[in-house]
Image (tube, rainbow, N blue to C red; front, top):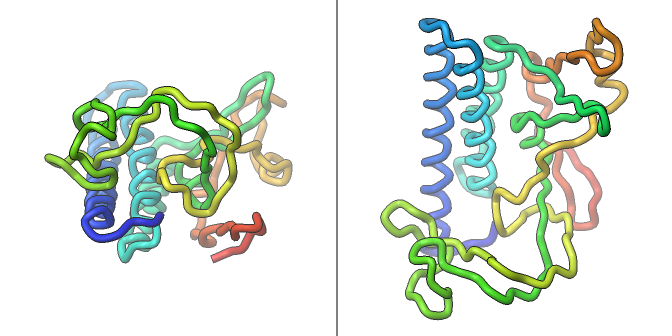
Length: 217
């Protein structure tokens, strides 16, 4: 993520805000689960918190707060797994997919699009960015300004190690056969398959170089 000056400060503040929001969401959900009988509600809230924590990690990439965000995300994933249990997603036409934000966050790769922008607007004032005074990447009343593309001619989508939009990330991946073989499919193919990743110590991030080669960290 390439930012500088006030823009960088705004991105860090947004990442830290997300880190706090996600942490509180998971903690409240677990407390709610322990104290109130609301089937499904605490778990849904906890998983929403994990999505926010993944976003926080992405916004804080290449900053002094990244390791902290990594630890918070892993700890929250462990809490959610031990409290609610976790299964791989299953779709009849796709099979088993890994959609967990904790697991996917450890794959440090994202997307960058090549396009000709025909119409866009400022996220703060909703005017054409050419006609307003807001600067992309800076915060205004707690909101980080971004350029919202409304119409564009798309000509490529590339995988990159550091996407300019922090949340432009992979949201699902096929589950490797080796992982499925370790899961217990009590009802055969299509039955719930438990994901136990967050029960074990983190083995680190998987980084992608610009040439697409994987490397552990």
